[in-house]
Amino acid sequence: MAGMLVLAMAAGLCVAAPKKSFTGELRKAQAQMQRRQYDQVVKMCDALLKEYTEPHQVKQVALLKGEALILGEEYTRALSELGKYQKALAEDKDFQSRALLMAGQALHGQEKYAEAIAAYQKLIKEHADYADRAAEAMLRVGDIQCKDLKKPEEGLATYATVSKQFAAQPKMAAEAARRVAETLETIVKDPLKAAAAYDALATTYAAVYDDRTRSTYYDKAVELLRGAEKLPEATAMADKAEKALDDDTYKVSFAMKKVDLLMAQKKPAEARAEAERVICAYPTDQNTCQAAQTKVVEAYRAESKFAESLAAAKALYGVAGSDQHIKAAAQVVAAAFRSVDGNLGRANEFLQYQRFGPAGKDGKPGTPDDIKANHLAAVKQPADPARDKRYEAAIKALPDHYEGYRAKGFLYGYWGRPKECAQQFYLAFKSCPEGKVPSAATELVLIGMKSYTASFAGLDEIFEFISYGPTGKDGKQKIKDPFEGLSG
Image (cartoon, rainbow, N blue to C red; front, top):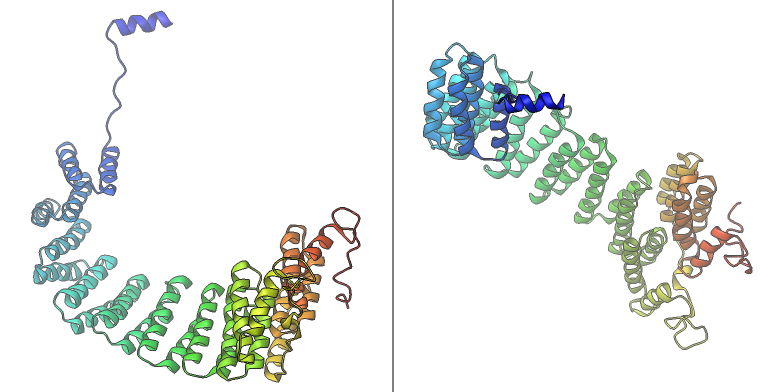
């Protein structure tokens, strides 16, 4: 067999080269288009047009060539080529509508705005059955009117016509509404009308956009109203956005905007109540809740309720569960001590105690740098019936299982009930699924027990108790059960 192959090769026989196909060659040209090699695309299209002459082939290549010429800013040549194939494919309405859209683009590139509009209007008139292209042509007319001819009133009217005339194509109608809002914001510079337009866009076209996009439009509305110093209206818009969106990631953002806006209106009591509502609504979102509790501290300070501010700061520090949150909360506590005392004595001692423990920086008890008192432990939570009612209702609504216990733990912590906080995280640890043991143990110690003891001191020993029991890692210790009394 091998000998026969050698003889065949010796006789000059060879394997035929694979036959070229139109589809394969067209894809090669399209690949060059993706690489933005426009000159090369044009050359490849010219070669294809010589070799492939079927109308459907000519159509595809002519459109690709026209696009490459436009993107390469060869507008005059593009118009010439498109005109040539419009004659050759006169009966192909699909091609004619596409060619008109491209011709309008080329004329716009030449700054021949009236001619570009005429091309788009011809498409709209003669090819209305291609609804998406007709809508796109009308949108481009609006763009020329707004941006090039500096006639935003005409452009806005054109966009409004798109939204009305192409309501059956909601994506196109939504795009027209988006351009209305953008024009009012950036060209007309009317923040109130722009805010209303963004609000309408996010509301009317809720089925078109996902929560991420809708949140962007609501955010625009809020910020435009804030910039126009319409703070009550901005607050109402943020409230509307939180209720309208489904994804908690975006809901909490608007909830916190409401808190900021209320503070900006010098309404600290309302801002504080709103921040506490946020915590009760999203108790396990630690980034949001730490920010909300920080606002509670600030609101109390703005009301000159310094004792309440310090108690809220204590809660903030107790529930802080990451290095970033703990460091930030420690500074909030120190500032709260300063507000109460009018000096930095307890503030600095608190920071030293939390950093080094009662033995001070040298780690040796009985030396001059010992810190005699954990000032944070002595801070008490003043009564507040409205706050108590809010937290009681939120906790009552939660179930008795791992995630429910976790949420209750956070809520008790922010409420300023450290023992109950520790109890709930202890229940969460005992009931958690196997895969959650490490995180449940960390939250029990770093949040629950830190809240309970108001200190980092002794937390390492609690971790050791959890891991090894009362005899410790070496099996020789007698560690007191840190959870004694928390089960009841």
